[in-house]
Image (cartoon, rainbow, N blue to C red; front, top):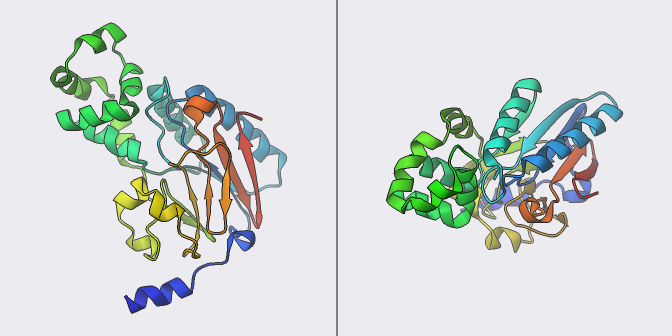
Length: 255
C-alpha cells in the first residue's frame, strides 16, 4: 500500500502540460459502434489533416467498441482490418463490447443473451442473416448459429486488441482506470468497464487518461482525463483526439 501511495505522489503533469514525444502525431478515435459510414468520413479527415501538417510519425489508436448498436459492425471490422494493412501504425484497444462479442462468438447461450441486450442484435444482422431468420430463431438456436455466422478473421482480429497504450504523458484505454492503481497493474475488467469511480476521481493519475465508453454530447477535458465518446451510433458524431508535442485538437464527423 505504501509503495502505491508513493507512486501516486509522482503522478504525471496535468493535462495543460501533457506532451507526446517529439516527431510523433497521434490520432485517437472514439467508440465507432457499427457506424462504418462515419468511420470512413473520419478517416478521410484524419488523412487530410495529417497531410497538411509537418512531417511526423503518425499513429491511429482506436479506443475500442468498434461493434454493436450501429448498423454495420461487420463493415467496421473490415475497414479496420484494411487500414491496419494499408497504414504502418494503427492500434486497437479492447472495449467491453469486443469482450462480449468474443464471448458470444463461442456460442455460449448466456453470453449471446447479454450480447443481444447491449446492441449485439445489430451486429448479428450485419452478417449474412436476414431479419426474418433472426426473428424466427429462439435464443438457443441463435447461440448455435453465431459461431458459424461471425467470420473467423474478425474473431482473430479482435483477439489481438490491446488493453492500454502509453505514449508520452498520455495513457489510452477504453473505459478508464481504477484510481490509485498503477496502469501496469490495472484489471482488464476496469480498463473495459469502469465508469463512476474513474469519472469522479479528482486526483492526478500516473498519466492523462484518454478514454471512450462514457457517452457525452461533446469532448470532456478534465485535469486528469479526456473523454471522446460522442455517441456516434445515434448522434452521427464520431470524434478523434489529435496530439502532437504539447498541442491537441479534435476532428469529428459533425463539423
